[in-house]
Image 1 (cartoon, rainbow, N blue to C red):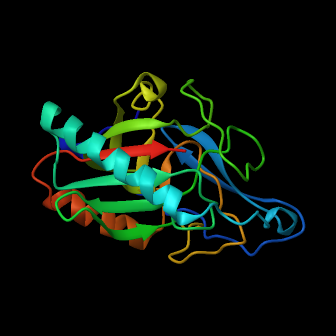
Image 2: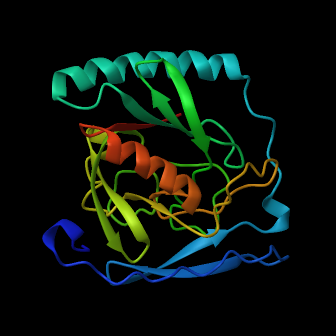
Image 3: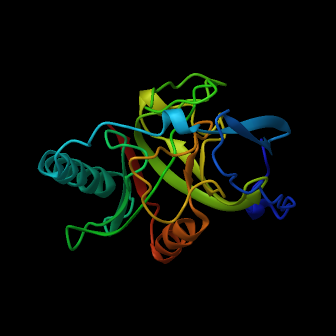
Length: 226
């Protein structure tokens, strides 16, 4: 497990390999985290087409229900009632599905692309979920956004699972971080590169998320759902 910068032991930042142009064969980008070699996977051309996403009214209804639950949960657990983060894994990976939500104004103030875990496969176009150690999968459920630190992925925020389905998030080193293969704009119908379970966004979007986290007086709830 990497040390937090709050322990006054910052780790060197290793710049990740740039996203490569898609080829007929799948391309791999190797990264190192917590002393272990990992591979972020990028889809080939043959894996770039997805079906049209579901209609937005249904997704909006689900968001409204979740934000009310988050607000109530936040009040009960001394967490932020100003902002929350929603990650809608029912949407195609080429669409914006990480939403920065203003709970006071009841509205989305920003949105960006976010990768899901590959579950240790060469590439996974649609997410599967697991809470198992070393599964390489994303985990559904509520998270508390924790401390900022600088590690092998550069700027990152710890995540603490708040539900049984994501209780191993901290031990698995599931964090929010930026990565080169995630662009700033939607790429649908193409699909996005995979993470190994981390909430992986573009560097620019990470800065927007970081700004919200830093100005919040209390820890923010992030909810991954499908």
